[in-house]
Length: 364
Image (cartoon, rainbow, N blue to C red; front, side, top):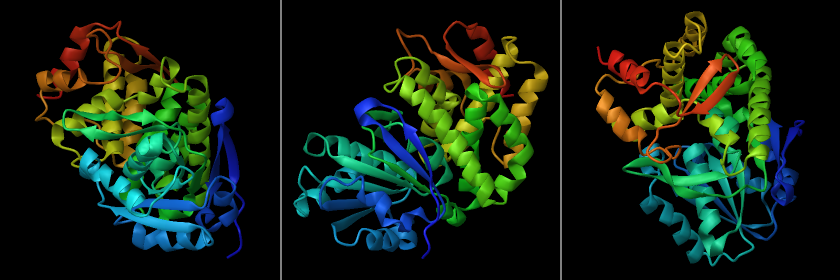
C-alpha cells in the first residue's frame, strides 16, 4: 500500500515532548511506530469492536516485534478498575519487562485505560496512542490524562502519563457510526469556543463537510484541534491553571454521564450539552449576548447533538454530582464559562442564583 503523507505536530514538554501524526492510512506505516518503541515487546490494548477492524493491520505493521494483544469489552460502562486489571493479567502472563510498550488502539476509553496501565506497570512503561474515533483523535489521546471511572465520579482515578507519540489515522473515522462522529464534532467545537474564534467561524461554514466525512475537512479539523490542545498542554501540563479551560462543558457533562449511568450518554454528547449549559449561564451573567448563545446552540443542533440535559436530573442532583468535579476547590464549584465566542475563563466568581435558575429552567 502506498504511504500517505502525515502532517506532524509537536507537543512541547521538554524531555517528554512527542509528535502527533495526522493523515489517512497511517496505521499501516511501520516507520511511524518503530521510531518510538524502545524495546521488543508490544502489548496492543484494544476492544471487541475495533479489533476486527484494525488489529490485524497494526500487527502486520509491527512485524518483527513480540506483539501480543488484550481485547477489552467495548463501552464507557467497562472503564473500571476491575476491567483495567485485565491489562496487567495479560502483561504478566506474557512476562513483559520494563522495556515493553503498550499501544492503545481504539477510542477514548481504550486510550485512557491503556495509558493508566502504562503509568502503573512496573512503575511506568512506554505507550503509544492510535486513536480510532474523532473524539479520541482531537482530545483524549493528546495531553497524557489517563484513568478510569468510579461509580461516584468520572475519571477520578488516574495519572498523568504522556505517550511517546500519537498516530491519528483519519481513515479509521470512516467506520464510525453517525452518533459517534457527531459526539467527536462536539469536542471539536469546544476548541473554537475556548480561544480560537476563527476556528469557530470555520466550523459554522464547513460543518456539512465534516458530517459527510470529507477527508480534507476532517483532517483540517483534527489538526487544528490538536494544535490548539497541544498549545494549552505545553503551557500547563498538569492542569494547575490554564489547562482547565479544556474542560469547557465537562463539569455539567460529567454530571450527566455519572447521573444517567455510564454509557447512556456518549461523552461528546454530554459535553456538547454541557457547553450549551455553560453558554446559557454566561448569557444569564451578561457575558454572552443572546445571539452568541444561539450561535452555540444552533451549531450543536446542526450536528445532531443534544442541547439540554435530561429532565430527570434535578437541580439538587446536578449540584451534588458537580461537587465531585476535580475543579472544585475549598467547596466552591469552578466552571469554565465563555465570555465571548472564542474566549473562555475558569471562574467561581459567579452568582450562584444564576446557576440555580438555569438548572431549574431545564426541569420545567
